[in-house]
Image (cartoon, rainbow, N blue to C red; front, side, top):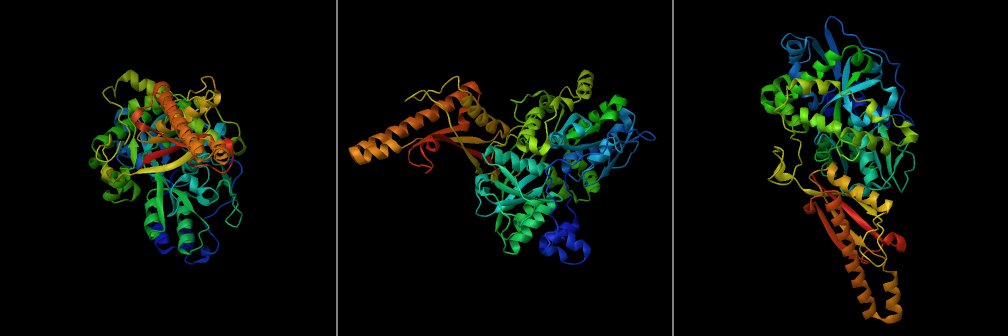
Length: 542
């Protein structure tokens, strides 16, 4: 569940003192890194499963302070059960919503509430012990999650050998691990800030929550220690830390244009089994509430602001960072396969991969969590038959496919780079058609483009120049220059071939791929094999 933005935390951030010390009325946390918690080597165990039963016709759900849940609050006309809510008028039950910042997965498992909300990656992490059903996509985070880093860090690769802070087994942890994996880097978990970082990986320390990670990074920065290179957290902490740093830190990237953080409704499994009609109504009410906020956001700012203790301006700002899903987007989300970037299965399987079996154990089957019944029932009723899928890429300055008041300020950022070895026919630019290595390399590039619909990739072909260097010594400069030019031409042709296959086989828009032949101009210094590569620069809009 996402953390709240409390006034106490705001004071702590502006003063540079930890939230814990402020709350206690002293500054004892300054030297103790009070936000840090024990690094876990396995996912916490949840309490045994039990079925939730409503009391007096009131269904209880728990949410955190996050604008992505505005549809549920709008449909309920607030937090308390009432006769005028969509759930009461249309579906025959009342809904009580509790706002809490604790990750109450054990309580949900044990039947103390009917439902909650989380991100798909959390399901993959907790696995089969988490006895919940997922009947609906609530929405996508479109910029709420982000990475704040020291000013000198320009892309994810620059975090190699450095230390960042975040909250373990949350969407922030997953976001970092996903980007590290795409950059070809591992994640090394440290017990605390006194431990030596691994120079070849991104090193992580964990805080009790992601807001605490932001506070720890900011305080470390203000103290001039620079033990941390950054933090992974979510809005408004991301912008708060960057602004309070006085220019020493910046937001490296958010998930504004990355379809990787998806919020879903999670329902107690026993409750879903025993009360399918109520779950159908819960999903239908959610989608109606999402439509209400999407179509007339100003009409619902007051009720959302009151529920979260925000001003209407804060509610408006936070709503701009989320995309509330409608019915056709729900259908597409659950129908998508592993090949469909941004789908339930893609995010679930990707989370399992980046966490790894040593940390979370064997990955549970994705389909075991999905309850298709409510969406199927809604489709039969035809309530949302006129809705159209509208989650589309932010395409650039002045012309976003979504309404975006900040579109003119978007910039292209080289988020990360990765090297891929492709196998070509000898002395040729033709790819080996049956190579599994080639297939995986092409697929990885295609997934980058798909997971961030507004992004582009720059393919830079590199070649081994060792023979040209030897030719300079034995045959003179003219021969060496001829060989270097030939290598540049070959590397350009090979990149063009990779681009062609991506366009024809993976249906990637040619305008989103640029090919460049570098030849042997940029040797790695690690030998011929390392020099024969295609460098992929992932350019995202931020």
